[in-house]
Length: 374
Image 1: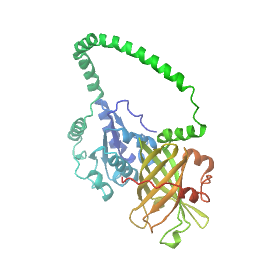
Image 2 (image 1 turned 120 degrees about the vertical axis):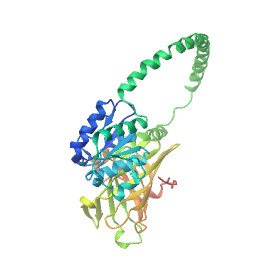
Image 3 (image 1 turned 180 degrees about the horizontal axis):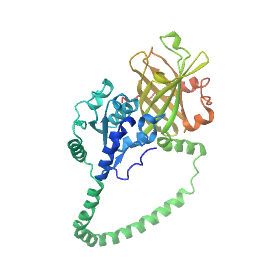
């Protein structure tokens, strides 16, 4: 369960650990009583089985991330994900320390050089600092918003009357122009109606290209098959991932974890530390009369080595299936890849029609589009 996203476009996202609720919730409620719009995960991020899309959308839409740092939160994997996404989205982060704690190396990049407030030293003074910092970021309370509206309305009343006087003759002239344009449009529409209709095939392609920005969201499942590698045991290995996608126009962010492997026909479901994190930044290219192309570049975690880089070059065969190729810096592995939407995966699982046998053939036809750096 999560808070509903505030109607105001200016709101604060609170990043915290559920174990700190005794301290965090009273602080949050105090800020709300002052009229500020606050978004928090009611269950606490540590209680989520998978990083929910509501949290991702809330971070992307907020004006400020209030990070409640504590001994619990700085060790939380989901806190690290939230702060990484906030940094990726270039959101301002305000660290408030509930404990005298030093962030680990994974979080130092996000909080390095930022103003921080020591809530554990004194609540009243820290609360004033928090409110001042939030106001400094341009976020005002609902009460202040309501008070500013009537004043602005009254101040502009005289200006509106002047606009109406000046606009009257302009509106009359515009009416004459509209009539003339309408007549010309009707004449052209009659001529256009005599032209041949567009073929159904091209209509479908245009529909996929125009709607793909909406379809590349929510949960997707990915499977790669290594057909070339410097490390022999990788050959034939299939890796499986579960990702949560968010999108802003033609830019896509994919974040999730590795969930399984298939080696020599034996399937292994990963748990615990084996479910290493992955994060990709993608770019969608809609092409005229051809299926869209999607490229991804990002990093994968490992239980035995540092992060390594992986790229994808994919073609959208349908709104629920992407096929193409992948390349990884892990032993220079490469091969075919298939991306499956949650809707498709719930129906067919990993056994989609293009998987394995025909994926390589489809991947060979995938055009190579330059991958954008994150």
